[in-house]
Each structure stands twice: as structure tokens, then as C-alpha cells.
Image (cartoon, rainbow, N blue to C red; front, side, top):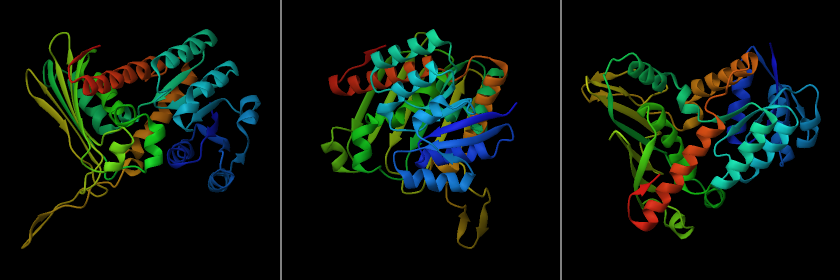
Length: 329
């Protein structure tokens, strides 16, 4: 079957998803909507789709599913609208910045029996998925400790910080989901530390740019997360899982994986510059999984519940920083 998509939001992440849809033979991008008309027009020209309003996409008979890439504070309302309209829904994280609002939204999804998938794309990265497979295959025995390093090449603009919900809800939330994905158990406690070391304007807005988090499960498994809004050497994305019989790790990726050795020593090409290129395959695999779920009628994953749990962990991390103590989840 071919799934016909409406894209809500033609910004940076919207373009990434448009590319993923365009590369999938089972998908067709029918229409795009954006509050900025020029952004929608440019994307429609690139992919041969129509520019429509959100209302038009909601009532359209030629659209089966929507991808929500609008600002975070619009996500929950749009999910509810399209759930009631009978469309399958893919929504970028987070569903909302408030746990109670997410719970209300998921109640509507449940009542309407809508398909909802949340955009934790890193589960679909081939390298990270291979780590999960090594765990499932028993290659390292029982998981004991997980280390996640995630550092952006530079801080976002101030106006983004004011709407993102802060570093824990915007950036670390991906790592909270990855921690659950790799630990195989739910975290029961969160201890976080945060500083402003990159841009004082971020601190003036009440946020942080450098954070460390320790998650613990009931059995004692641990995950350590390191985040920074500044990595001068590129987009730093690494994971390591230590187990009772060994260790498995996914290292940083480069556009070209070569190494040159000469009189100047050993050199390698730079890392990917940001998520748009580092996770190209992950985004394509994510959309393919969403289409599979629609075709088979199976439960979408990551689900709305996954989004809710990751947000709750983000809230706990922020509370840990504010109160200076470990928070029980």
C-alpha cells in the first residue's frame, strides 16, 4: 500500500521528514502546511506536493497520515484534531511540555483508537539498533551500565530556548528514551547536575547548556548521560553498554569513514555537523516503521506512552537540579 502524507511544518525537521517520505516507495507527500507561506511553497516545489492549510489537510480524503513538525506547544492539540479526523499520526517529540496535558492527549488517542508514533528517531539508527541487537543476542550478558554521550555542535538561538521547554525536555529527552531502550528496565531514580558554560544568555532564560544525569533502575542498573550544547569538533553521538560478559559500543559517525596515516600522524575526516546528516538513515527507517504499522495495524513504537515516560524523566531531572537531590520516579 501507499501511505499518503500531509506534512505540518516546513522548517528544519519538516524538511528532514519530507526527504524521508520522498525516499520511500510506499509513501507519497500530498500536501504541506506552514504558518510561513514561503517555507511551504519552497518545500512543495522541491517535492511536487500541494500547499494546503491545516484545516484542509484535516478534512482531506486523499491524505491517510500526518507528520507533525510544528512548534511543541501545538503538538497535543494537533494530535487530538487528527485523531478525531481518523488520520494516522506521527508527531515529533515532545507531545507537550506538561505531563498532565500529554495524559489528556493520550486519552483522546485511546478513545479514537488512533495510530500515534512519537519521533524518537535514534532507536532506528542502524548503529544504535545493532547495539540493541547485540544485547538481545546475549553477546554481552546482562546489561549493567549504559553510557550515553550526546553533544550538539552549537547552542540554538535564544528564541528557540523560550519554546523548547529547556535542555532536559528538548535535548536530553532523546537520551532518556535511548536509556530505556538499552537498559531494558524502567528508571526509578534520577540524579542530575546542570551548568551554564556555553552561553550566558541561555542561563538568563532559565535554562542550562551543560548537564549530566544518572538514571538507576530497581535492580541497580545505571545509565550515565552527558550533554553539552557545544562540541567544537562536530556532532558527538556515542553510546556504550557494559554487561556481565562484555561491552558493546557505537562510536561517532563520519560522512566518510577513512583514516589517513602519513608524516603528520593519523587523521580522519570530521564528524557529521548535526542531526540532519548524522541520522539520515534513522529518519528513513523511522518513516518506514510508521508505514509498516499503518499497513499491519500493529501498535506504533515509540508510542505516546514512550513519549510520556521520557517527559516524566525530563521533569524529574529538572527537579533534581532545582532541589539538589536524587528524585524517585
